Every structure is written in C-alpha cells, then in structure tokens.
Amino acid sequence: VAQIEALGRRASAHPLSLADEPGVGACVAAVTERYGRLHTVVHAAGSPIDQPYFSAVTPEQWRNVMEADVNGFFHVAHHTLPKLKAGGGGSYVYVSSAGLARYPTGDVLSVAPKGAVEALLRAIAKEEGRFGIRANSVALGVIDAGMFHRLVETGELNQAYLDASKRNIALRRFGTAEEVAEAAAFLASSRASYITGQMLMLDGGYSV
Figure 1 (cartoon, helix red, strand yellow):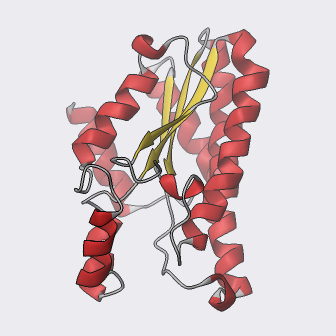
Figure 2: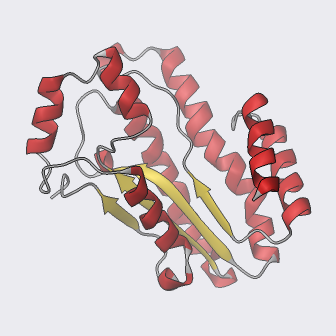
C-alpha cells in the first residue's frame, strides 16, 4: 500500500497526459516491471469539459477532447493489451456515460468520445476474447462526485437542472462514487468471467 501511495504522490506531481503515447507506454512498462503481471485495466479518465450545445462547440474543443479521450484510451489499450495477453488474459473496464442510451442536452463533448471508445471496446471483446481478454463498460448517470461538484459550483448545473434530473431518474436520487467502484470491481472480477462486450447501465433508471 505504501508503494502504491508513493507512486500516486509522484503521479500527482507529474501528471501524465494520455494523449502522450510514449509517456503512456513508459508508464505501463514501469508498472508491470514493478508489480509483475497486469490483469485489470480500469479506465476512468476524462476531460474537464464545459457543456455547450453542439452548435457552440469549437473545432479546438472537439480536437482536444477527441485527442485526450479517444486517442488516450487507444494508447492505454495499445500498450496494456500485450501485457494482459502475456499473463493469460485479463479485463478492461471503461467508465462510460448513460448519455449513450439517452442523450442529455449539452453533453456532446462527453458523450461523443465515449461512443467512439465503446466501439473500441467491442473490437477488443470480439477479437481478443479467444485470448481470455474481456472488455466491458459502466455507463454512468449523474454521480454525486468529481466533476459534478465543479459544475454545480460554477452554476453550469443549477438547482432547476438538478431537480429535473432527479425527476428523470427512476430511483429519484444521484449515484455515489462507491456504487461506481462496486460495479467496476464486479466487471473486473471472476464473478463476471462470462461477461464481455457489455455496457452496464449505472444510472438509477435514467435510461429506462
């Protein structure tokens, strides 16, 4: 645990951009050299985006989010897949968006790249399953954690939005980080050993 915490402190001091393909490769090599076999990749990285309508998205915003999120995932998968195969199999779990099932207005910079990554996950599931590789995703609705707090603080998500969102959720509440972690851990574990190429909706019934 102390070693992992030390790595975390160094990572926070020198953050790695997933758009940096050589940097991603070096990170994967360092982790596998230090800890041995790689058997699970949980990809929960995303860009700190605003929420413009599609008509207001600039070419620069589009390029930045696609480079960071889509190419970033490709870089991670490109460098980790050989490690998973060398160890006899493994699992990818991608943190995706319920917006792929029911689109929320103003969320194109989040949903569009995740749609592309979902296609990459299906490719991995279909083509690499014979090597014991599984690839799934957890599609999140509104989670009371992380970027959600920033959007509330800046007013991009006002009280009217929050009230309307809860009315659109069957369970009438937002999700928690702990619930996301439980779903990701399940898909990564042997309990989900016959599940691949699937998107688990963790949205409280938003997409129903």
